Image 1 (spheres, helix red, strand yellow):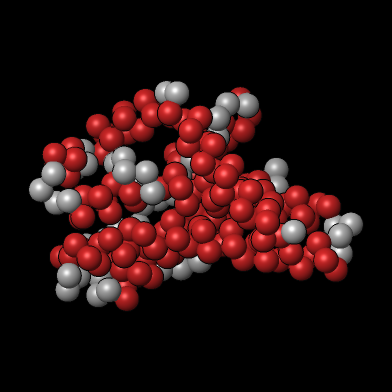
Image 2 (cartoon, one colour):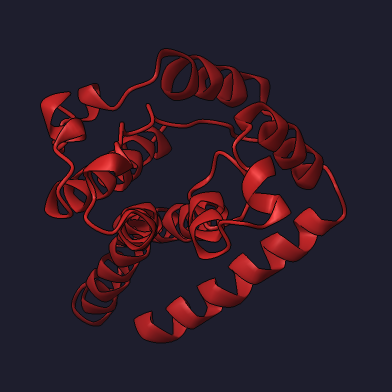
Length: 201
């Protein structure tokens, strides 16, 4: 059950980062909708944040969940392509930053209070989940953040035209998750977690 607050905190920071980056780049849309906040209630999606995690938890299946997408109007950006890349990357990078903060906190606890197993376990869980969010959201598959980055880097590519369709992207995403490629993605997460372990120790 300790995973539930970590889930909401991590998603909230992710969406806040999108909103804040967009605001700094000249788009007040998210702020006008009350999304530039660290209040989790503002980012909850009925299906993605409540129903799907509930079903995943009690059925013991693979955890699935998401927050309400942050509204962004790239028409307000001075440099739409460049600024949209920054705003898209802000979410995943915020998760990486949160994971790093937890790692340094763990480092201090390990040295000062090495017997605090429950706290260390909770912090490691936060690191694991946020590293997952960081990498997962950078996948170049719509509607993930990585698809926005690739679409702006290569605006005239076939991928850019495909990325316009979130439905098509969702199908590809589920195909990826249940394909043999998923194990390589998990392996990459494990490699990064080993690097985090080096920071802690």
